[in-house]
Image (tube, rainbow, N blue to C red; front, side, top):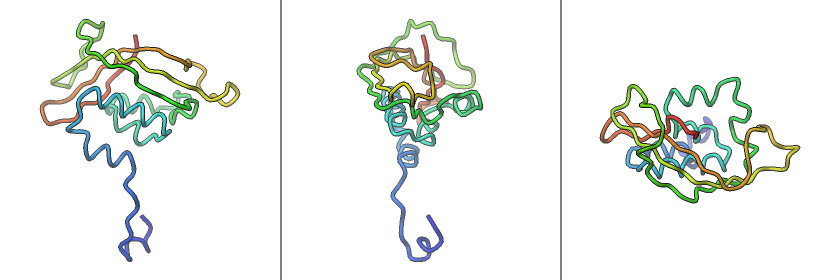
Length: 147
């Protein structure tokens, strides 16, 4: 909010990232994944990072990331989320609880010449998402994804 807005008591609308941070401690793992995809579709880096562990957020926003704001993505929809307790996932250190979900989703990408990340694939696909939290009452965060 700018200085005049603060002086006259005008409030800016709450950002999606701020709204998520306020309610994320009550969210279940599947909700975190769905929120992550909404943030991707909105191209909102702050919101995307709010769904990730600090370690994953550092990697995601690092200099080698081709499209941090996911501007290559026109639409992102979660089409299915199921627990995957037998998925080949390594335990993430530093967190008391961990869940692995198989997430089915669809991506619609911008036209080829506008894509910033050539590794993204259009259409239906799936990946395992590893979610962790420090303990009860703490938020679930995405620590990793892949096959």
